[in-house]
Structures are given as C-alpha cells and as structure tokens.
Image 1: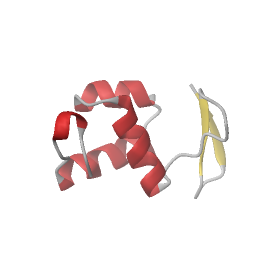
Image 2: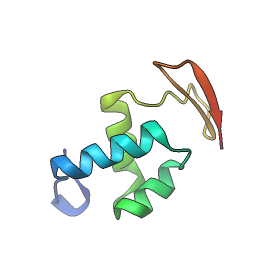
Image 3: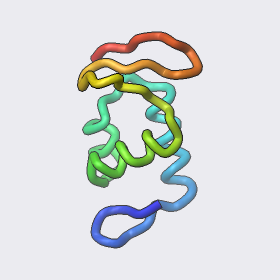
Image 4: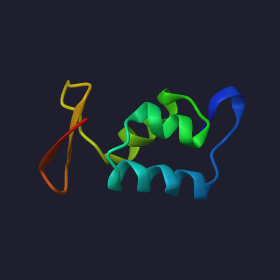
Length: 72
C-alpha cells in the first residue's frame, strides 16, 4: 500500500494500523500521528480492509463484525 511522498508501508506497518483501528478508540488522526503518516493513508487502509464504518459521521463508527457504535 502506498504511503506519503512515494514511500510504501511495510506489511508490519499495515498490520499495526489494522490492529490500532480494530482494537483501540484512537481517532484516525491519532493513529496517523503515531504511525508518522498522513491521515488519508489511514483512511485508505480502513476503507480497503473495512475495519471501521463511519456511516457519514466523523466522530463515531461501527465495527462491522460487532455492530457496536463507538463514539470519540
């Protein structure tokens, strides 16, 4: 998967981002800051792997496999 400024994510980085999206309450921006990348990269990974569904909201999401609404 492509990363900012032409750099690519390693498999380990993608797995770490997927883990953070799936198991934490961190916002997309907080994950991007932690992983030293653009928020849009985190959004792209989330959309590709369908980890969180935002359903038109910015601050709340649903994990498709749980059906639980998370707010932040």
